[in-house]
Length: 81
Length: 81
Length: 151
Length: 151
Image (tube, rainbow over all chains, first blue to last red; front, side, top):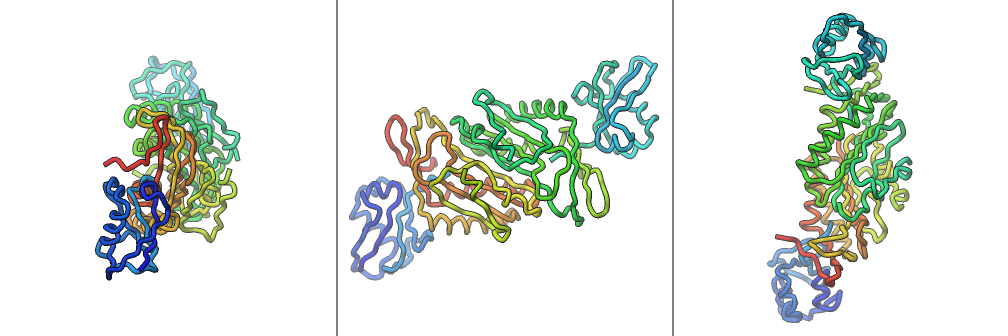
C-alpha cells in the first residue's frame, strides 16, 4: 500500500522533496514502522535528533496504526514565534 | 505666608475648588502641619481615609518642611488604569 | 486613529509616557517595534467594561496630575529596567470622559526577549495603579463615584 | 496596514488564529477590544532582531503546516481558557520571508481582568514555541540554518 507523507522544515530539506511516497507491504503499519521506513529511504533523517509524526493533524504515538487515507506529516522540532 | 495647594479627585470635590490658598503664620511649615490646616479648613477631607501631599511633583514625608514657592498638591488614593 | 500620527523617531529610543484626551488605539507604531534590537514587545491595553460590580457603566471621567504622572513614571521605569533588563517602556493614559469599550490605558515594554517584557509590562501596570496620580470617577445608573483602590 | 482590514464582527466573539504571508502590525483592531466585556487585553508582538547570537541576520523564512497549526492552537486555547479564565485568544503568525524589524508573530489574550490576560498570553507564546508546527530558517552572513529549540 502507498503512504504519502508531507515533509516539513529540515526534514523536507533532507528528503529534497515536500511529499514522500512509501510503498509498504507489511500490515499493520504503525507510526514506528513508518519512521523506520522513512529512515531507510532517507538516512540523513538521523541527523534530526528527534521528530514527530502527525496523523490527520494530530501528534501520534509510535503504536498508532495507520491507513493509506491518513494525512501524514513529518514534524521536526518546531521553532515558531 | 501663603501656600497654594492643588486639589485632585475626591479632594477637589470636597473642597469645591481645584486650588486652595492657605495663610499660615507658624514657621516652619511641615507637610504634617499643612495637612492639619487643610483638615481645619475642609473637615470633609476626613472622609478620605488617607491621602498624600506631593511637593514639587514628589510624594513627601510628614516631616518635610515647605516653603511658599513649592508646588503643593493633595493626592487622594490613585485609581488609574 | 492617533496611533498613525504617533510616530517615534529613531532617536526616541527610550521611554514614551503621555497623557491624552484623544482616543487611544491598542497598537504600537511601527517606529517603536522596528528597531531590530528588541525582539519582544508586550502590550497591555485596558478598556472600560460595560458593567462593573453589577452596575451599568455610563462613562468614566479620568483626571491626572500630568507633570507628576510623567515624573513618577520615569522613576518607576528606572526601577523596572534595572530589575528586568528591558530597554523601553511606554504608557499612554486617557484623561477626560471615556466610554465603555474605549481604551483607557496602553502600556508596553520592549526587550531582547519575551519573558522580561511580560514581567516588565505587568510591573508597569501594577505600579501605575499603586502610585501614579490618576483618578477615575465612574458614572453608573446609580450616580457618580470616585473609585478607590480595593484594599 | 492589514490590521485595518482585519475586522472581526461582533459574532466573532471567540478566538482568532491565522497564518499570513502579509506584514503584521502590532495592533488589535477596535472590533476586538470594544466589546465592553473584556477589560484587559495583553498582546505579545515578536519582531526579528538584526543580530542573533553574534551574527547579522539577513532574513528568516517561516514555514507552517497551516491546518495543523490551527488545530493545535484550538487545543491549546481550550486548555489556557480553562486554566486562566480568559475569554478570547488571538494568534497571527507570518510565513515566508520576514526581514529584521518586521513582526513575526502577534499573540493576544483578552479577559475580564489583567492578571489572567498576562498569564494567558504568556502561556500561549510558550505553547506556540513548544508544539505548534511552524519552523524558521535563519539566513545570516554565515549561511542558512534551521533553528531548533534550545534544550
